[in-house]
Amino acid sequence: MEPASPAAIAAAGPGTSVVAYFALSNTAGQVIVAVLILLSLVAWTIMVGKFRDLRQLQARNSHYEQLLAGQRNLLDLDPDLPAEGPYSALVQNALEAFYHYGADLRDPDTHRAALRMGHVENAMQRAVANQTVRYESKMVLLGSIVTGAPFLGLLGTVWGVMDAFGAMAGTGSASLQALAPGVSGALLTTVAGLLVAIPAAFGYNYLVQKSRIAVVELENFASWIADRIEMEAQAASAGFL
Image (cartoon, rainbow, N blue to C red; front, side, top):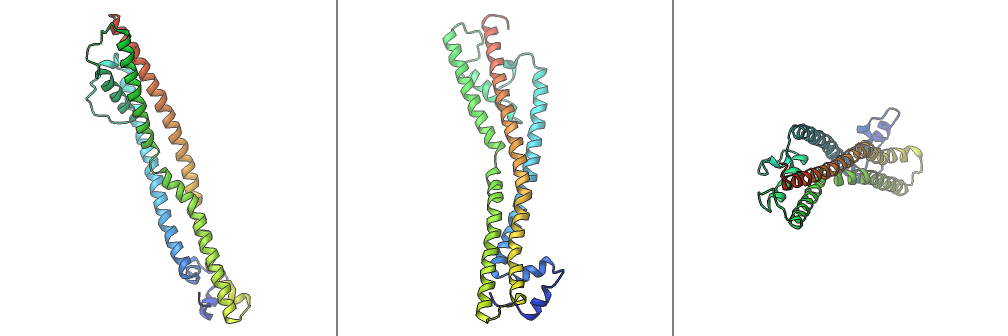
């Protein structure tokens, strides 16, 4: 990095703006700040989008639970209806697996009934796994931004300070006035890294917690659906349906 000009040094006085600090940064620091600004936009896009997705999925699940509350027999639902949410997808997968063994509910063969329910439970486990991936999508990228942004900022600062000391050694000037502008510009990258990482960290932790709760609720719902299908199948075999 070239030594700071007298004009740049004068601009680095009290009350210097962020734009002036950016101008005092070396090329590597300016590139890193630009990358951090891009990462900030990506992080906020993911956080806002993920929050809206989770809220929308929760609303669909609540609506579907209300529909099931008014459904007397779960096995009377059409397995070919399109799924509109995670809970709906679980039920559709369970019914498709159940009716894969035939449409006759009154099957006196207990071994065949056990095989049918095992097939249903396996299908629901696969459906839960697929929906879990849906809940956790894009979280790895957000976590990478949380982890990587401070290190990018530190890299820019170390690089800028190294250039500032190198320029000072080359000119033979050891004054604080010659060193301060370069160091101020270098420290900007650390500030930028923290401004990216701090809100992203809070958003990441909140979204991870919401996703984990949603996955637990999904697993509990899958268990409840499996129990209900098994009870209805047993009742049908006994002639009660």
